[in-house]
Length: 315
Image (cartoon, rainbow, N blue to C red):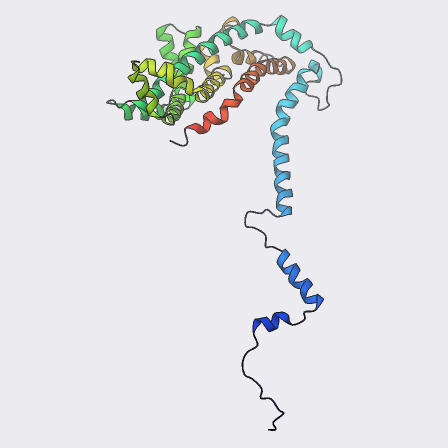
């Protein structure tokens, strides 16, 4: 080895020297692409999955909207075109005029308003007081009462209609609006009481304590302080009770006889039965019946979501 030769060093080359080394444009571009191409997140949906999901939702929407839409279309057709698959070729209000002028529809509407009004007011009051009692107080028989409210929801209409009919006949409540009101309350109150109990559980107990400090009795605390805070729950309870009484058919048909005593749901059966087949008038009456329910839903919809979800959490 001569003096001019330098020994080869076994020392590894530092990162600084590597970073200072020239890098080709191809390597730079590949590194940039690999950095910008982030992996797909776990909750990020594939485009094909999004297309499939929207297609399924569109089909489901068409299936849901088509029956009521076709009901409205049929109501404006002449009677002879009721089963025609074409759209309205001869637009007419004859079905609506026949329903209102030539049938007992106005009497059915009056009976339904009486029954539904009483059922809604009494149902909301009984459900609210029951829910508040089981939410705030501890008394003997509370748990059996709650179980009883649940068990009553397990029986189908076909099982209850005969004993209820015999009971109403014994009490002389057949062909009376009171009989239907009592029957509908047995359907709506148990479910609504459970729902109101869950809603009252979310209202702080300190509000009740402040009312007692101010000298209010338990009912005064409930009526003046707690009930105004329960408006979303009351809206859901009222809407459920209204729909239960407005759209019920089985009890209304069994307990009420004579066209002048029928409600709207029972009156619809007079248009299509074993003796007659007037689908035009039936669709027109169904459209008219749906209007009040839609108005009630539009009035209560801002409280429905908060009322339905209020009882799911506590605190």
